[in-house]
Length: 139
Image (tube, one colour):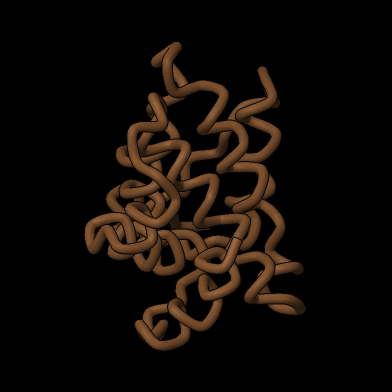
C-alpha cells in the first residue's frame, strides 16, 4: 500500500460531542448547511455564544435555523420567525420597533445572508422576502 502523506485532501474538522444547548443546534445545522460557508457561520454567529448578552437571542436564532424542514414546507412562516429572532439577536436592547426593523435595509441584508450561509439559497429575491414579512407589518 502506497500512501502519500502530502495529499492535498483536506480533512473536515469533526466537532466533539455536544457540550451545551448551542452545540446541539449547531450539530443539527451542520448536518444540512453548505460546507463552503462553515467558516463564515463560525465567525458571524457561532462565536457569539461566548458573549453573555447574546446567549439567549443566539440560542433562539439557532433553534429556528435548525428547523430546515419547516423552511421547505412553510417558507413564509419560517421566514417570519427567523426575521423576528434575527432582530432580537442584532437588537438585544430592543431599540428598534418592528416597523423600523422591517424598513432597515441592513437587517434585510443580514436576513438574506442567513439564507445563503445556512441554507445555500442565493437566489432569494427582495420581493419574496417582502411577501413573507408582509403579515408582520399588519400586526
